[in-house]
Length: 183
Ligand code: VGL
Ligand code: ZN
Image (cartoon, rainbow, N blue to C red):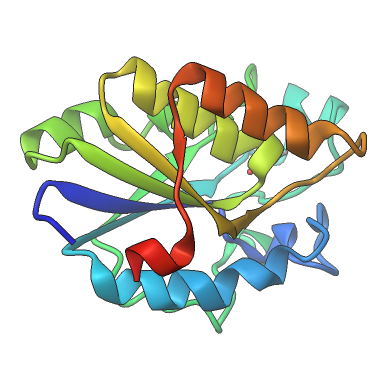
């Protein structure tokens, strides 16, 4: 992959996998494709949902990804060795922090510009929340933004949420690209 491109892995954490506190249906299916993808990029970045034990976010969602707990860890099957920088989000107690551009430990837009990254490939969980928010924000910040459908899965609280999320991303200027075209 070109030097000005980075892979961005959104929230592939134990609590978002089947059996987790906020398990995304078939969320584990993103791991294989992501492990293939990480070998293709010079830069690999990842976010973690990283909540305090008490947050208004848990009025909407079952308690999940509390910072430094097992549920917030990466699953052992995810190839994390190539991750260059982690972005922690949802760290406050007054907001959701769905977008990785709201990370509080590092400023993602600043980081990407400083490294000369202009193109972002977004994968991970969940399509209808943090993947969508991150990809749409990436476009807003001026990055060429791709999402790889084989490497994302949706919560689908409503069955149409996934389709709507894909449509929203397309309308915002996010491009969908098949895994085979990238690996
Ligand atoms: C997420 C719901 C609540 C996500 C995070 O990572 O997509 N979804 N918190
Ligand atoms: Zn959350």
